[in-house]
Amino acid sequence: MIVQTDYWLGASKLFGAADSVSTMGTYVTELKYGFILINIIAHLGWAAGIAIIAAIAAFIVQLFRITSKIKNGLGFYIALSSSTMLAIKFVTGILMNFALMPFGTCYIPFLSYQGSGYIVDMILLGTVLSVWRYNRIFSRAPEVKTGNNVLTVKIKELISPYIKKFADYIYYMAGGDSGGDNK
View 1 (tube, helix red, strand yellow):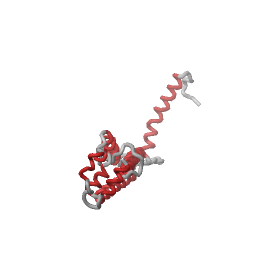
View 2 (view 1 turned 60 degrees about the vertical axis):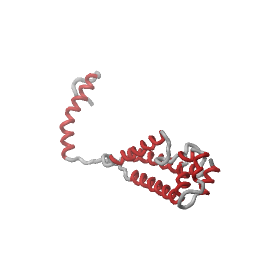
View 3 (view 1 turned 135 degrees about the vertical axis):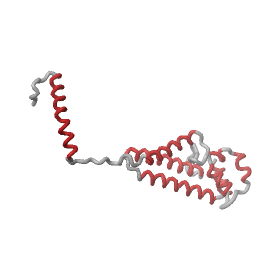
View 4 (view 1 turned 180 degrees about the vertical axis):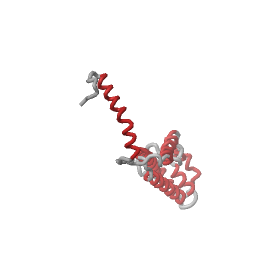
């Protein structure tokens, strides 16, 4: 695979198809599906490959920009992990296409045919978009108000006698004094 990727990258032109591009898929069918970036460069030229890599880089930057604006703490970490997973898949797919990384499951999300990996990539992207959609519901750090406003004081005055009666009743049921004059 490394020899064939080097051959097709070396034979590619800046614009247009490489010489003898018609025989490209006859030797290795993996070049059509897993090594889609090399296939695009061989058929359309280096300019198309560089444009695709630039679009992928802009997509990754946009994912992390959206993630950084999320206010909810849990949502932020969920979106960050989903964005990181997608970025790692993109980078490893591109590096494997150029034979700069050991070969494994070689695909670029949303670009090459990958079967169930496509579903996982859509779930990751959907998670980021869902968290972004509900961004303004909760803030990252909840506000703690430590003031005695009138409503809070009134609620405490209304509820505290009932809480005291309930606590006395529980104490009495547990075998304590029945008088309610507990220490």
